[in-house]
Structure formats: C-alpha cells, structure tokens
Image (tube, rainbow, N blue to C red; front, side, top):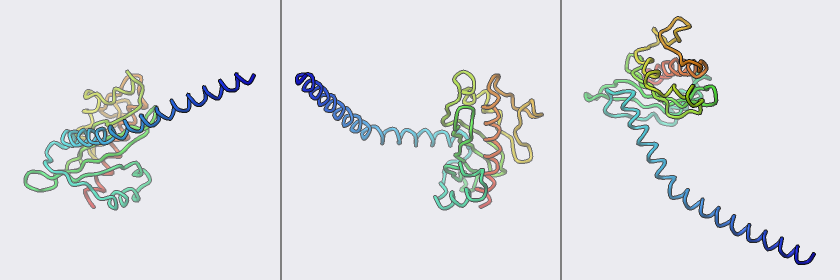
Length: 196
C-alpha cells in the first residue's frame, strides 16, 4: 500500500513537471510567432484594401474616437472594426474601406468593403468566417462576392429570389443573406464615414 501511494505521488510529480515544461514551451513559441502572425495579418489587410478600393493609393485610418462615434450612431454599427479613407493620386478622396462583421450560419463573418466616393461598392472581401465548408464557405469565392460591386444606396444588393441580381449559393441561403446584409451595412457605414 505504501509503495502504491509513493508511486502515485511520483507519477503525479512527473506529470506536473512535463505539463509545466510543455506550458512554458508553448508560451515561448507563442511569444515568438505572435508578432509574425500580426504582421502577416496587417499585410493581408493592406493588400485586400487595395483590391476592394483599387483607385486609392494612400489610406488614412479613422481614429479610435471617430470609430466610436460612428458605432454610436446606430446599434447595427457595433460590429465596425476599422475604417479608412482612401485618397487618389491627386490627393482627393476616392472612397472608404470598412472592416466589420455580420452574423452568418455558423458564426461571425469578418468583411472588408471598399466604397467609392459616390457610396457605391467597388469591392468586398471576406477576411474570415466559420461557414460550412463546401457550402457557406463559398461566400469567399470571387464568383459570388464580385456580384456586389456596383451596388449603391439607390440600388441595394438583393438575392435574385427577392427580386435582385445576386445569385445565392445553393444550399447556403443564410450565408448568402449574410453577405447581402454585409453589403447593406457597408453602404450605411460608408455614408457615415465619408460624410463625417
């Protein structure tokens, strides 16, 4: 009996040491890789901004106070993450890039939308999502997301089954509707950002 207790304590201590070493190792690796991952995200976002608002050569981010002020205008705006004003080669405002999220079938969909100075969608990009692979995940595909370009406040995006020209993804109506909601939200946000 005494031997069994000693063995159990010994195994427990060994397991605790292994767990401590593993935890320290993971924290060390995380400390090294986190800045690299953040830098790659910034680079990916910068490239995406140029894709969704191609006429902009320089972007100026709105301040945290300006973002908070826009968020406070409407309860739908709470998912706004960032916004940037895009300037053309002549230094004039060519539009805005809005980063925000909408609810999809399986969770949040983070979007980036470019809108020109007439508040018309020039491009949209899905930055992250957790939609179903092979179905809702198709919202990322160019064949779907490029359908939103050219829509404006006076010509909002609607699914074809609702009288619009956006072809929904077969078997992914909720994800398709989330993208339409994103387009509408982008237009409303851009209006506030560009008219500030």
